[in-house]
Image (tube, rainbow, N blue to C red):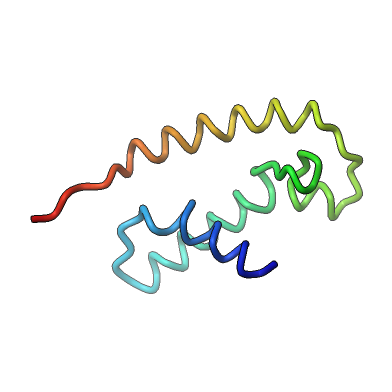
Length: 88
């Protein structure tokens, strides 16, 4: 299961960042942990965030669809800001 988490962190959060120092990596990882644990709903948790599930919040799939749309829009905006550039 940890391999799946590592893949999400690398591909959805870190690879599109230009990280040039350990301090920047630490900053991005700290932000990533907050987003992943507290803001990003997860289908395998019935739409809860990991923190909600840890705190015993019951599963509400309608909340998942609402949060999923918001998170999708946030990812689209973030990805547009960090568009890839071609190197020659």
